Image 1 (cartoon, rainbow, N blue to C red):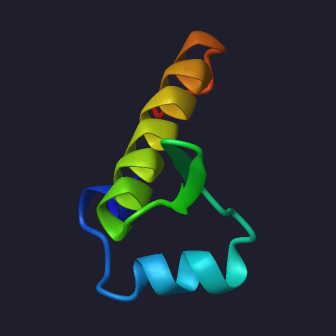
Image 2 (tube, rainbow, N blue to C red):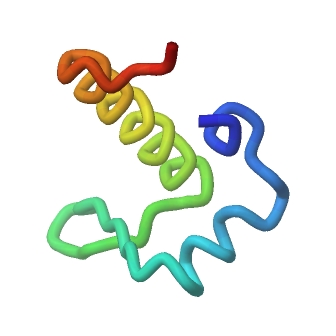
Length: 62
């Protein structure tokens, strides 16, 4: 969660190199890799979504 809130400068290259997560969007009929900003937004959404799932399951902090 802290990484998504305040990402280190090398986060996106590290995610791309080791994360095996390749995110694409469609532009007309071509797949285009996410920009760094899109990767970061995706990461923030995933943190938010998984935090909500954990809280609903009673696994939240505290």
